[in-house]
Image (tube, protein in one colour):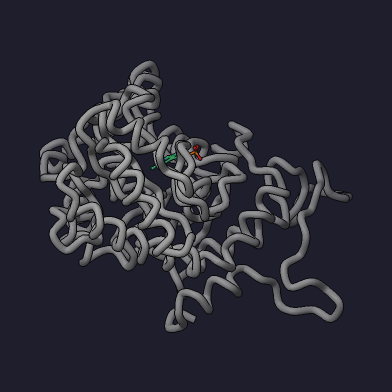
Length: 374
Ligand SMILES: *Cc1c(COP(=O)(O)O)cnc(C)c1O
């Protein structure tokens, strides 16, 4: 199974063995409890512990995260539920964790909470080697690569080797790449974590998250945390997520191809500075990204002169919605500085490329840049 192509794997991922008169992907199972007599054993007992719709999806995501390997996936109601399940199930007061200081904008909130529980939090940027010096005595190293929104990339294998040598567990937030863009477990990570709200489900209509581990003890910790926190996805969302996986390769391939084309167009514009796309050959992240990523993602970031120029550009776009989040089938863009919290310039734009016809999208971007320059 590990030799087949990503598309072939994606369309069949997690499907049960075909049965006469049954659908290929069974519909969502809505159940708070299951018939259960005698001792409470067996796969399905209570709806906060397990659900058959999750089981199909968890197998599907596992097949994409580590083809041909024995791994276990745990699905969650959101990316943040997945992230906190890893951190809060692993650390105890007195432990230390290493977080990026340029990662997802809720990480500073996570930091505050960890510190309130007596956990020491050490931070350093995604790019460069600063984190190597922070590993000694830590419990977990948290990696986000490419980072959101700055699109820096770090050498995951190298950090994993240093972390494991120091007895530190490694989790990778793989949201931006998705498992068909990058496979953290193959790069040595202990946890592959993602917000599947983004490219993984790709339609901007559900929140979702998952954690995949090779070590059954780590999976048990994460499942126990899900049970305690109750951060469980609804069966309808789980089913929609599974349905969306069948087009993952089509969506991501189109998005990545157009993202590179967009980056090439932007690179030629004098008013665009700070352009970042890990797939662009001249990008500082490209050499490392090319070694560890299989697809470079749907997000391109860049700067216009100031807040006003960025707002003029966004409002002149006709095919691109001004909205947050990324990875969806419809292109979106936003002035990231409007949220506060990210260390970005006022004119910084995070652009998420959808699956529109590339020539339409690129023409729209060019006319909006022209309009913004006036
Ligand atoms: C969106 C995002 C999250 C949070 O996911 P939710 O599904 O919104 O909870 C975490 N990490 C990254 C990199 C993200 O982009």
